Length: 126
Image 1 (cartoon, rainbow, N blue to C red):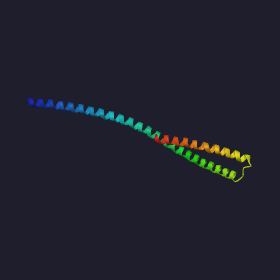
Image 2 (tube, rainbow, N blue to C red):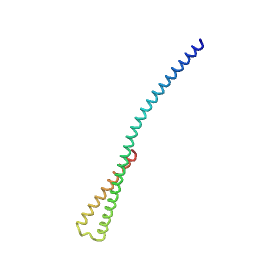
Image 3 (tube, helix red, strand yellow):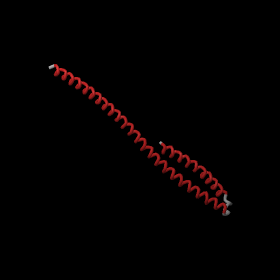
């Protein structure tokens, strides 16, 4: 009978240890689920921000393409005006004024393109 009591006490002790281990595991699972939900929330926010950055990048690329086209057009007009002046069509003050305007515009555009290129680079890095 003493052996039975000792065995019963041993089983009770093992059962208590198993319950404790189960409670610890349950607590760990609860903590991990909570942490997982936080990470999912953070990931959703970051994915949304990434989507917005991609949209902004697409818009900025479209602006850059338009500005490059505008610059090419301005340079073409400038070249045409220079050709007219070199061909002897120098009598018109309006032609000279237009050439000066085109040269000023042509000088401004590369700076604008540079600014947009820098903005695109910043967006790519983020």
